[in-house]
Image 1: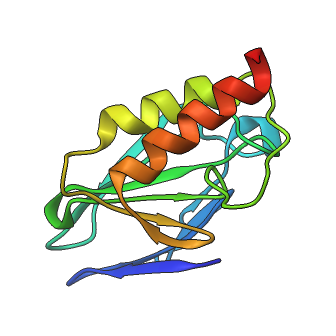
Image 2: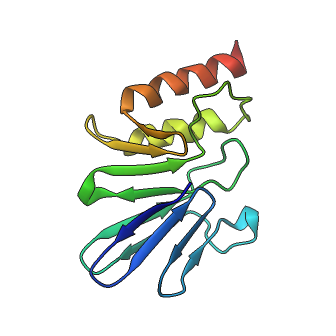
Length: 132
């Protein structure tokens, strides 16, 4: 899954565990050998974006892209419409994702676009799988 945002000066390409910018910047979480600990913010010329690591999901090192001007949050593999086998940290990560969303946010996942309510239900499903 890739998601691209083009600004006036630069283009950013999102993948669930790596974000690249056409100026040579590469963002990967430290757990996967990169240098990103928690957050990177940048201006693509006429678009401000943030890349954050909120915690791990199914594999670890997943990144979240926030495009506030478009009210879009890209969460990649942190959401799945399949039956997940949750890792202990995953529900807390999704809880933090929920904190980034407005009622009208577009949420882009590796499975497609979903709404806030879908993420809320997914959060509850993860909690139920972990804690019965």
